[in-house]
Amino acid sequence: MTSNCSRPARPLNSQAVAAADQALYTAHKNDPRPNALFDAAGRKRHLSATDPAQECLRDEWVRSYGNAGGKLEDTTFKSDKRPGDVIQECHCSKATLTVTVRYEPLDAPVKDAAVTISGPATKSLTTDATGIAKFTDLPPGQYEITSRYVGTNKLADHARLQIGSTDWARATAHPPFPRNTWKCNLFVFDVTTEAGFPVPQKPHEQKKFGITFGTVMLPPNAEDWANSSSTLITYPTVATPEPGDVVAYANPAYTAATGHVGIVSYPKNGTPETKTLSPGDNGNVKQIMRRQSVSAGGVSIDEDDQIFWHYYDEGNTVETSRILFRRMSP
Image (cartoon, rainbow, N blue to C red; front, top):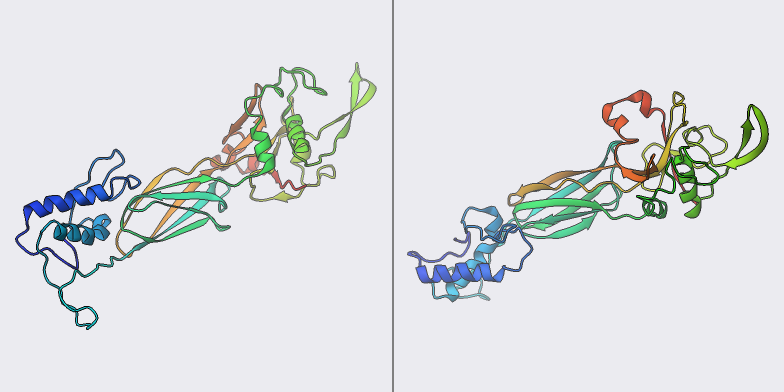
């Protein structure tokens, strides 16, 4: 390994070379991996004079070479304040990496995503309202980029606490709903009101043999939530949902229910990616976070990225036109 600035004199002292190599590996053995000297498994990377990831380590190696008895080429400075033969510091050109995090489907920026880069340097930043995290002053080399959502929402948190519960299962009696009835709207009513978001109920006539014998108050159904003109549900509609919003789907063709309703959950983590930065690079990487929702299925409370979202993947505009999002606020 040689430096772009100070250089060992030729021929090289083999003992000093071996000592400088060992000193460099030892000095960085506890750095986060993978990095310029060790791969993810802890194996030593070959030292190379042309590897941009190792550029900012070269002067460190040269200094170790000199400390081990290797002779260095003289560098003379004109400044009176620094006379004599000294080792000139090498300021390698740093790089910049801009990471943009977006939702999928319904493309929109993801605010409050923690983006971590690992490589010659390891850093973490949280995305701003535009879904961007910008890393500066990075040593060149290969980086792994990961992202995860770190924002919080009390309604999403409360809904997620119920994942796996069978309390709202179709076969379970959950007053005022009897066995063998779909209860997605009861689940949404229960978790929203428990989390402090008031939701009105509506009267429902009880009939037997075509005769009305009473009235019971029931939660709004999926069709009520999905009706933008509803006078029962007054929470505002939004085009791009956030965790904690209510998502509702209405389908008049259903016979056992009016549709489906749930709570928008936190998105899935972004898929890890790698990016190699050369000196002076202004790199760009996009991370995609898949949307999810929590709702009552036939057996249990489930979190998934399909039940409402697959229609967008398929480009089914007829079905997506039946989906509505409501922003929940106390």
